[in-house]
Every structure is written in C-alpha cells, then in structure tokens.
Image 1: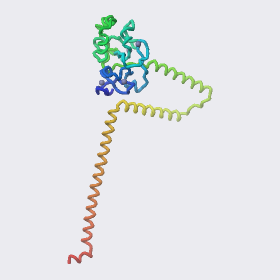
Image 2: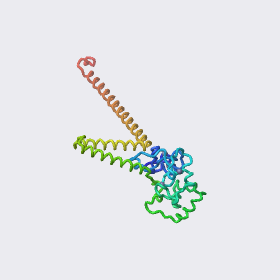
Image 3: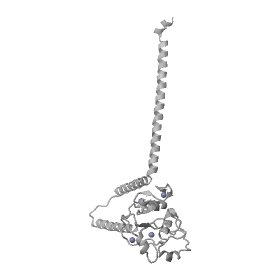
Image 4: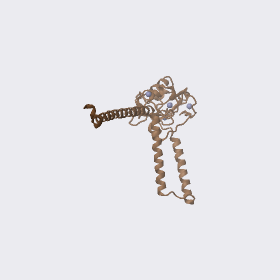
Length: 268
Ligand SMILES: [Zn+2]
Ligand SMILES: [Zn+2]
Ligand SMILES: [Zn+2]
Ligand SMILES: [Zn+2]
C-alpha cells in the first residue's frame, strides 16, 4: 500500500513505468499514464520489468502513442479502433477473460470512463444485456474494489525466464558430472547465500525508497532538524558550563589574593 502521487489516496496500484503509486481516478484522468503498465506494488518489488512499448491486448500491435488508447477494467490497454471494431466474439479481454463491458456494479473510474466511451458502440448491447443481472462473486476480478485491480501481464516473460533457469540448472548439472568445475564447499555456499540475501534486501530497500520518495524526504528533513537542534542544545550547555567554570575560577583567585599573607599589610 502507498499513497497516490496525484491525490494522496491510499492504494496498492503501482505504475512500473513512473515508479509511483497511482489510483484509478488518476490513472484515467492523467494522460501521462495512458500506456503505463500498472500492477501491484508487491508485484513490482518481485519483478520491476514491464513490456515497452505496450501492446494492444486485442491485436497485439505495439502502441507507440498515448493517443487513441483505452484502459480496460482489468488494467490492460487496447487501441480505440480495436475496441470499437475488432471486439472478440465472447466480448472478453483476450488476456484475462474479464468482460470488456464493465458490469453495472462496477462504479470505478475506469468502468465509468469505459462506459462513456462505449455508449454508442453497436456491439455493446449484445454483452451488456447478458451481464445486466451480473452479481460479482467473491474474488472475481471485476468485483474487486477500485484499489485492488491488478493484472499480471508479465506472466509470459516469467515462464520464459524460468525455463531458461531450468536450462541453466541442467547445464550446471552436466558440468558437475564432467568434473570440470569443483563443487563449492559449505562455507562458500553459505557466504554466497548471505551475499545474495544482503543484495536482495538492499534492492528491495532501494525500491521502497524510490516508491516512497516524498515520505523518505520528509523523514530525512525531520532527522536533520533533530540533529541540528541536538547539536545546538549541546553547544549551549557546554557554553553555560564553561561560563560557570570561569566565574568559579575568578572567585577562587580573588579569595586566594585576599587571603595571601603579603596582602595583610594593606588592611593594617
Ligand atoms: Zn490519485
Ligand atoms: Zn505511469
Ligand atoms: Zn489493437
Ligand atoms: Zn484483461
């Protein structure tokens, strides 16, 4: 969870491109995020990659401009022309099978904008009648509240990467068997694991600070103020004790001069 950079609302949707939290109102309202890949913050911490340029979810063409694109309720992006003319026969998003026409129960900003856009499109009636009495089930993608709509467009990339990971594992295995590379002993392995863990913690901390720039800056300023005031107070205290010391020394010196025997003559 974090605060939307535009309106400070608590949300969990995170723009991977601008690396900031963005609520659905601001996502639809501000033209800057028109083509951005938006997912959960947690998802971004695990994998910050995103497809660029993004592709139209219907025809897979690369979207090179912010103009003429529409955000679906599942957060996928389509070209206006595809949305108007090339709608899939089942009326669903080809990526996640969410109905392209938002159900009447969805009062989110994206659903409202989409409804306005689809108002006079002929194919919409065919699907809107079938979802008129639609009651979203628990956990259904379209029933999820405004803040929680999340898509995982990186799924394809993930599977590809994990399969190459398997490939690497196999390669290493064969290397082991051929006996070219000596096995790491336990200490080395532990050291490596610790280093890896430290690196991961560092990276996630870095990402956290990047995502919460404003909060981090505020915290930094507060810390600086505290440090400055502490040093000022300490300086004042040491100044005060120095003054007291000086006065005490002066008093003692005076006492000693009045007490010293050679001065007695003055008082006789
Ligand atoms: Zn916002
Ligand atoms: Zn963005
Ligand atoms: Zn398209
Ligand atoms: Zn979708």
